[in-house]
Amino acid sequence: MVSNNQLFHLFLFLCFFQITCLHAQLCTQEQTSALLQFKQQFSFNNDADYGYCDSVGILSYPKMESWKEGSDCCSWDGVECDNKTSQVIGLDLSCSWLNGTIHPNSTIFHYFPHLQSLNLAFNYFGMSPISSEFSRFTRLTHLNLSGFSFSGKVPIEVSFLSKLVSLDLSNNYDLRLEEPGFELLVQNLTKVRELNLCSVNISSVVSNSLLNLTSLTHLDLSSCGLLGKFPDEILHLPHLNKLIIWDNLALTGYFPEFINSSSPLQYLDLSVTNFSGELPDSIGNLKSLKMLDASYCKFYGSIPTSLGNLTEMTDLDIGYNNFTGMLPSSLSNLGNLVLLRVDSNSFSGPFPSLGANLTKLVELDLSNNQLRGPLPSQIIGLPNLTWLSLGDNLINGTIPSWVFSLPALDYFNLSNNKLTGHVKEFKSTHLTVVDLSNNNLHGRFPSSTFKLVNLSSLLLSSNNFNGELDMLCHAISLQILVLSSNSFNGSIPQCLGNFSIYLSVLDLQKNNFSDIIPDTFVKENSFETINLDSNGFEGANTKIFRELQNATSARPWT
Ligand SMILES: *[C@@H]1O[C@H](CO)[C@@H](O)[C@H](O)[C@H]1NC(C)=O
Ligand SMILES: *[C@@H]1O[C@H](CO)[C@@H](O)[C@H](O)[C@H]1NC(C)=O
Ligand SMILES: *[C@@H]1O[C@H](CO)[C@@H](O)[C@H](O)[C@H]1NC(C)=O
Ligand SMILES: *[C@@H]1O[C@H](CO)[C@@H](O)[C@H](O)[C@H]1NC(C)=O
Ligand SMILES: *[C@@H]1O[C@H](CO)[C@@H](O)[C@H](O)[C@H]1NC(C)=O
Ligand SMILES: *[C@@H]1O[C@H](CO)[C@@H](O)[C@H](O)[C@H]1NC(C)=O
Ligand SMILES: *[C@@H]1O[C@H](CO)[C@@H](O)[C@H](O)[C@H]1NC(C)=O
Ligand SMILES: *[C@@H]1O[C@H](CO)[C@@H](O)[C@H](O)[C@H]1NC(C)=O
Ligand SMILES: *[C@@H]1O[C@H](CO)[C@@H](O)[C@H](O)[C@H]1NC(C)=O
Ligand SMILES: *[C@@H]1O[C@H](CO)[C@@H](O)[C@H](O)[C@H]1NC(C)=O
Ligand SMILES: *[C@@H]1O[C@H](CO)[C@@H](O)[C@H](O)[C@H]1NC(C)=O
Ligand SMILES: *[C@@H]1O[C@H](CO)[C@@H](O)[C@H](O)[C@H]1NC(C)=O
Image (cartoon, rainbow, N blue to C red):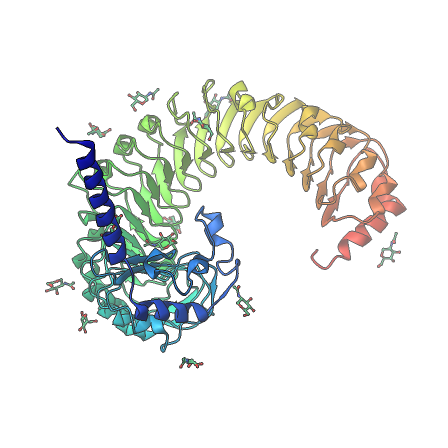
């Protein structure tokens, strides 16, 4: 049995032990004053990160405010000490409002030889160069200088930091890694797992030495001006989770075969590069893939059926390539898809049967292909679909009712197809763009569409719609209204001249409007284009119309 007294002594002992532990945290006077001197180099501006941190959900505040003489620097915000030696081993001053320059004589470089982790991301360092003194932190494993802060040449000395596990120099818009900087960096940072050089100007051929970085999990070389052939074996690195190389227009490359089905690759963005070739069947082995963006490349051939094996996929974008053939029905297995873009290719055949699985879709873009035949008569449950773009195909038949019932629809484009029949009332009240131009649709256009307060573009030209525009005055966001070559009739509403300050394109030509032009038109307006020709009235010849045309053509941008 343990007596109360014994417990009390045990308690006292634990308290004492705890206090000694805390005492061991006290940082040295030298490091305290070095940090306080470092603090004095800066002023604090909440816009030092240009609002970036808030926009990505990282709390942004002046961490250095808690840095005060007479307190233990190991307890300061953003400072981490070694529990045994009390040496400062970590500084996280990301998103801390810092505005100032880090000169080579800064105390930061001279009193912290044990520093392992330094994060200065998203402050403002006056677009100064990165000091070569950073290479004094020889034990550094994590260095993060991301942000809109530094410019100039990345000092070669950064490649001396051979213990780095993570290096982030991204988003410094005018930072250069001159030859042989990239090569040296890649050769020496053999332990690196995360390497982010997004928007650092490298402008050289990609080094094959990248293949030696076998620990890589994240590699971001987007907008680096890379040249030559990308070593596609990088896609086989055993731990690679994220490869982002978009916007390197002179970078060529291919998809390798994926023999191994245990690839951890989840994010692959090759968009806006010169990658080409076909998608291999073995792409179906990339079981973990969630995001594939291969848009704006030079890929061709047909889509392998095995793509339908990648059931983790949420974002698939292969738009703007030269793909041909049919869209495989296996795509309907991808029940986690949120975004599916295959636009501006040469896909042919019938509209793919997307089944009832793709309920999470938010964006579906199949536009600018050669898909033919009717739309599926029934697709159920697309509660979150906001973007439906099927324009520039050879789709015929009528528009099935499920399309008009989509509750969240915002962008709707079926233009340049061969659709017939009527248009029903839209269920969604969020619509901003409706484009049905160049089809064979007819009948009364539902006037409830004109009551949509978010509607900014309504394009219905070259169909055979009729109806009146009396509800139009409710569409207060309208910027573009093109109703030409239809059979709309009635009078042109008085409001049109002034109801939407944004209205810039008004094309009502070749209809059956009967009234003269309202004189409200000549008031202050934003018209860039206006055409009311070939209606059933002489409006186009009235004085008001000519004044209006004069006013429009006098604008500098027309
Ligand atoms: C940094 O401070 C200077 C004046 O000290 C100011 O002109 C500048 O706007 C500040 N920059 C940012 C990004 O806060
Ligand atoms: C130091 O101790 C604290 C509290 O026990 C712990 O959370 C932290 O991970 C330790 N740090 C190191 C570097 O060991
Ligand atoms: C550090 O260097 C800067 C720029 O060269 C200079 O303006 C500043 O006076 C120096 N500070 C100290 C303490 O020497
Ligand atoms: C690699 O790092 C070591 C220090 O760790 C340095 O001596 C060497 O010069 C570096 N090599 C290159 C190519 O940067
Ligand atoms: C660098 O820091 C920023 C801000 O904290 C963070 O968003 C980013 O992920 C960090 N980079 C790396 C490679 O950890
Ligand atoms: C990869 O590393 C090995 C051994 O360190 C070296 O011999 C080889 O040259 C390196 N390969 C590249 C492409 O840098
Ligand atoms: C598609 O292929 C044609 C010829 O085969 C070529 O002219 C065109 O540039 C290619 N388009 C793209 C986006 O690669
Ligand atoms: C992958 O897809 C192909 C073609 O659809 C199929 O034959 C194969 O069984 C699938 N493999 C797995 C593991 O699901
Ligand atoms: C839905 O997906 C599952 C597997 O993810 C598949 O077995 C099923 O056939 C799909 N249903 C349709 C209608 O495509
Ligand atoms: C639709 O979006 C909402 C809100 O983002 C989400 O909670 C819901 O699960 C989504 N529905 C489907 C079927 O994905
Ligand atoms: C749609 O076009 C196909 C040919 O692509 C044709 O066989 C079919 O009859 C057309 N359907 C309608 C409703 O016009
Ligand atoms: C339109 O402009 C022309 C030449 O600038 C002018 O002759 C004409 O009178 C103007 N018409 C009206 C109606 O203002």
